Image (cartoon, rainbow, N blue to C red; front, side, top):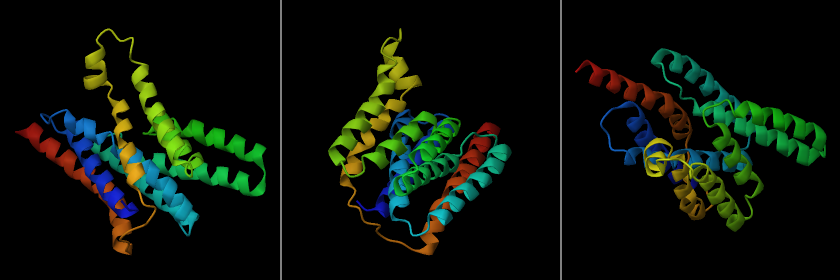
Length: 225
């Protein structure tokens, strides 16, 4: 699978997740498969960070759409802003890369810690932070990367093992751990960009606020019926 195919897949999975979140009476498996979307997005931004020709423009695009989502979230009364999480992830990688290139490890470490803390207050929170670090530092070690990702995903399952109603906790209320099933797509990634055009580049960005707007409008329509 190339980057273009993975982006399309992540978008489809994201639609399932948001449809289940906002429109009533959809089966819970929509939410299950939706948990695979964010890991693929974070995997791709690390790859994008490595391959992009202009990191500054990459950051500006992400934070530009993050600002758009702040306004849209206010209008639609929703909490979604994955661009902010992704943008912080790219800034974090930029700081880490700067430290590696300049050998200014103390400065870059302090800056990375600050950005990492800020990232905890974005939509992806600890999940996003952990995935960015895993996909970046273990990028060239595919086996170790997959094992670490699986353990990271299942850690959140293990924290629920003492719950009095374990089945409902894991499969109805807190099933974020299902992101573990995204790992085969990382193995299938061939390192290639795939189809690319200016239109598609911007379409991927625009689709996020657009699809959320459509879903919320459908939700309001259901509420009127």
